[in-house]
Length: 97
Image (cartoon, rainbow, N blue to C red; front, side):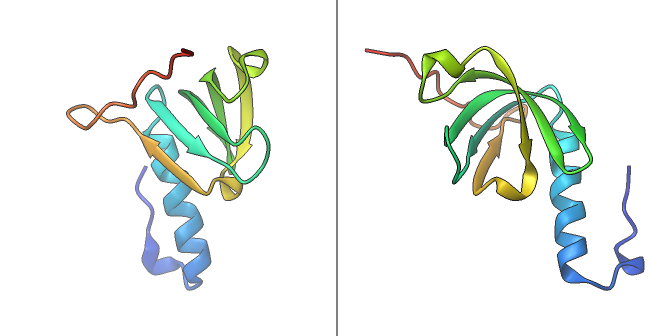
């Protein structure tokens, strides 16, 4: 889907739509997310985007009890993220030592 930014006048609207589109383009890719809210770190696969919320099949968080679950994260609550793409650096596996 291509957005017509010429029809948007608000820079925040352009930013929000571009961010949502970036996550939509990352569906089925692995993602690393830092959030200011507990549990802070999410690593998993993007399943889908619902409005401005991303659904992630979480493999890893700070706490094992919260892993291997589906999390719904509001895109505006994400501080930092990285979506793996073919040919780009991979998100490392985080193992307990």
